Amino acid sequence: MSITIATRESRLALWQAEHVKALLQDLGHGVELLGMTTLGDQILDRSLSKVGGKGLFVKELEVALDEGRADIAVHSLKDVPMDLPAGFALACVMEREDPRDAWVSPGCATLAELPAGAVVGTSSLRRLVLLRAALDALGRSDVRIEPLRGNLDTRLRKLDEGQYHAIVLASAGLKRLGLGERIRHIFEPADSLPAAGQGALGIEVRADRSDLMDALKPLVHMPTWLRVAAERTVSRAMGGSCSMPLAAYADWTDGNPHQLLLRAAWGDPDGALSLVQVSDRADVQTLEQAEALGQRVAQALRAAGARPPAAGA
Image (cartoon, rainbow, N blue to C red; front, side, top):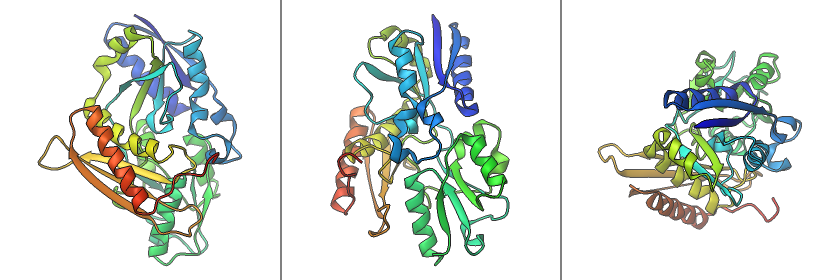
């Protein structure tokens, strides 16, 4: 087939698109890239939760698919809205890179080493509430957590310019771009539970393109797809927007290759309520079973005090 990939033009997005391009070429397809700038790339002075959410990174790519200018779109799955617009489908989830959060700092190896009055940067409400809980446990009410927008290179530049003492990023992006040496510390999920889909790549197509779905089947990594399906179901059931500080992370349990352990956490962005954390496990071999596990964990979150975002948030 001849396949055109719609992609954002950030360095990380282009790496991801080139990665998929190489894999498809190895399967005998002809592949070209269509680079695009999305609204999410243009609005950098406000947090995503205030300007429309992570869907701002995919809308223009979906328009290109709908108009036939592109055939597929490659996304970081954590940036893909939980419910795709009518007429679009997630055709492929690829093998996951490291899903964990990374601590990046020129002078502080850990949270505990931050100087008095330090500033930590993050673009994520999820990371904000998890960082706040960790800092509270250390008795560090002096540390400020400030917004951090821009692509990966922009965020690192702001850190290097001294605007922040440390920033928290996804390990996957740093590793994909050969920047793993910038990582001072990787948070284990128990310390900073990842976002739904973090570290995984998803490929979106028009729902009527069964030919493309067949062509993409060799790139599917079903163990990853089952994990992220459970995670994304939690987010969808809880309201599914980036205005909600929610973490959801699933992994296979030791000793049972079919048992999935799903953990989730919700925090109050205003800091008035304590962090809510729940988990559940189940034998999972189908997407339907993964989604059922996600529904149970979402119900447990609500029962424990987690609140979906207010209407219009």
